[in-house]
Image 1 (tube, rainbow, N blue to C red):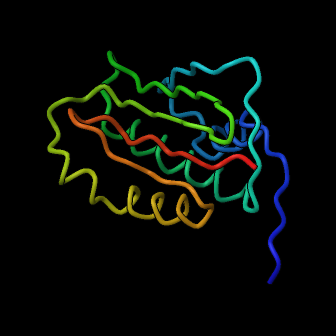
Image 2: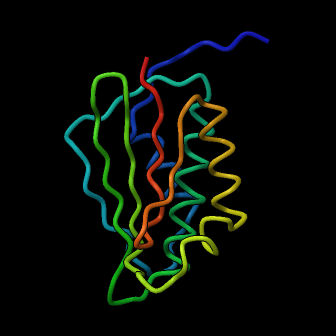
Image 3: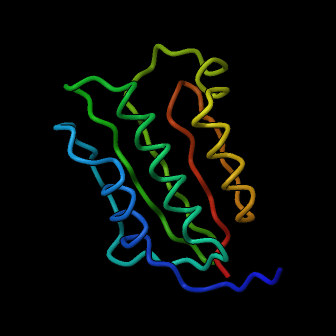
Length: 130
């Protein structure tokens, strides 16, 4: 099977992820640059990762501290960080959860990395930009 890179606009992937999350009355704060493009052989994986991480962050956040998604584009790299606002969850327990393991696998399949940060923040997903 041949995989070909194609430009992916983070706005498109994020819009699809937010559609997948649905309207549950919970907010996900977005802090995005004006333009954030990357290339990926698997744009659907990027959407699935954003959906899984967003759902996990919403599940573990409180109404008074909604999760925040920030993105940063650098040459050759797109970094997305989802912070859920909880500092009391042990990193090992959450970093090994099913949504995060699946997101890590999908991110690595795209050639990126997914890392957990301490104190607990939902991990940044980094996809190489080609």
